[in-house]
Length: 419
Picture 1 (cartoon, rainbow, N blue to C red):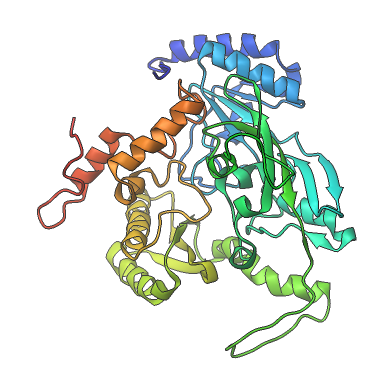
Picture 2 (cartoon, rainbow, N blue to C red):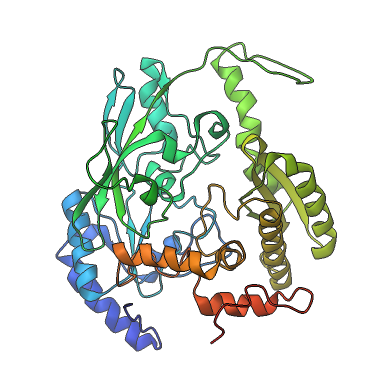
């Protein structure tokens, strides 16, 4: 069963908005509820600015009780809920639903505890990635996963996307550095995944929730592992090795990589950041393929990777004010993702699927595999209220996408039901 979201007329939207605002007024203070156009426009997209949608209502709860109340009210009204952290995601995972509530968790920004003996930190979901390392620094510890947006992105968003960063080759992704996730189900009931001990009671669902893009539960608190700060650098086969003399110089070394994305603004009005993975031995193949795609689509591409773990972040440079450039950019991006799959990789490494990669999911996964994903979603959220329309493409969508990609006269996945 799936809830029906009627937005066919402005009148229907206005009436639905009135109902939702009335219900949520009982859940949060008036200053935590936004619904006027000038208030909700800032929430219409995440870091993937090419796709935008204005939410029906934005709610900014300040306590766990308010989160639970909001979810219960939305569930009762069958209103979609899209969780949002800092809005730095790059796949449209936090793009609002036109008839839904954007649940901003920005006010959940408290560091609950840092335990140097157990090398853990417990933080609310809105705490910035870098703030965890800053809090742990007095103990000679830090939080290893380090996305390029770490000065702004939140740990809740990192959990949603299973973020990595350049350190993930050695330390793994978010999943490998999280012990426990607390939050709420779509019905507003408290739930906990993982635990502080080596063994947790019940099914081990931590790996299911981390990377689920807000489709299974709403995260409010995370306990992460901390690791000692490295004090020695080694390299093998490098043409040059320079060891930082102090912390300031170390940060300057990293700033080049961390600022690669914003630096592209000097050479292009817009960019679309892709995120796929390949086996490391196929790095030269994908670079040559992207070079050929630049000619095919008439667009430039700046290649930014953390290639040690095979994760690619090509930046396709375009002008969003030119509809044809946007169209070619989308085709270019899909080609990169699907070429990565052909080379033995995946369509996403750490940015998630969101709305950006829905079509490419049709290429990587079989109908049976996608049905398993949908069944898991239904087990947590039968009405499909949490972040609907993301991550898992419908059979109809894949059928239509298949018609657009004919190879040697044959459609891919010929066994897929076609309307």
